[in-house]
Image 1 (tube, helix red, strand yellow):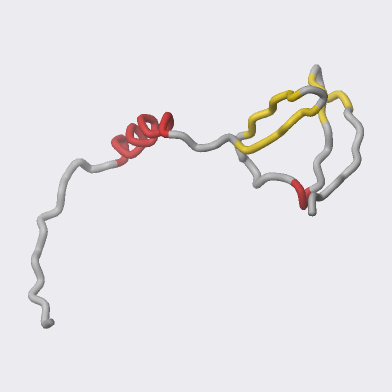
Image 2: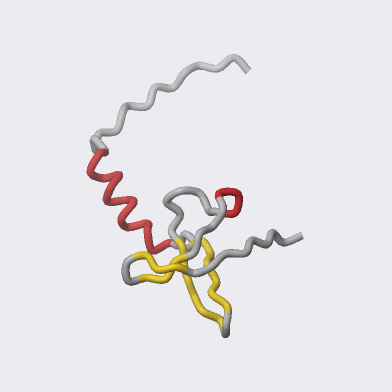
Amino acid sequence: MQKVFHTKQFKAGNSAAVRIPANMAFPHHTNLIVRRKGNQIIVEPKEETLERIPALLAAIGQSHSKERPEFVEVERKW
């Protein structure tokens, strides 16, 4: 069953805005996509794509020591 919440549009600065109840909201800092489909305005989370990989690797590279520890093989008792 879909959750339904009635609200009114209001102005926030130069933008139109609506209040979304906490139990219907996305997690804090979720990137969202807003699109219009006919007379509907659809708000949905932005899907994570591979386009972020270069930035993630660059961030890892800055904090990585670039040294590889020697591998020490341990005798196992199978």
